[in-house]
Image (cartoon, rainbow, N blue to C red):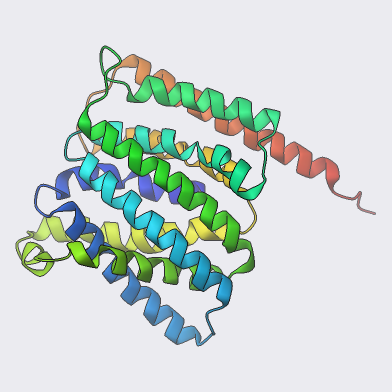
Length: 284
């Protein structure tokens, strides 16, 4: 899951530089049509049957993910790459809260404390001067809340499904969901320059094929609450990309926010590792 957040962390700068040349709906459609072709080839090569859990879960998760990606792409037209990443992480922290009524998974005290610290870190990272949020931030946060529901949907079906089949169905569903917004996609792609095609290639391979597969694989064993918290690492990596490749400037309080997120993640994961170690049977 950490590897997935690294890959997704690099997308915010890339999205910022791509959406001026292709509409958000067209971009999401193009990403997941291309990803579906890759997944289709992988499924055909493997030759296994797609199970019911993969079909149902992948379809529900795909619809939610498509809406989340669309709102994220719309939001980044009116906000910075860093703010987009930070708001996305803040929203996905709600996965633990959504999992409580939807899956009956009540967050424990350590996870709840970790979520609170991460939310505080996200607040330091996201809010503009004067504690005001703009239209771009509102779109991005709405998309992030939908991503949190997608995390819960994956947690509902992924443990009983094949990871590759689940992610493939999710990708196919996303492409179909975005099809009504796909008019003019071919023309927009034809107008991309060389750098634009490299950016699209990263969005397809790293962010639309590899990272979602890593997420589904992780969610076969980790509950949605911990996945939502691990998503909070995404803005930390996005901060690095935005400062280096994106040439964005950040205030000191944003670095404090990143430190709080790291503290929350390491605290919760360290507690989980200690609990797992204490429950292992003694060897010999």
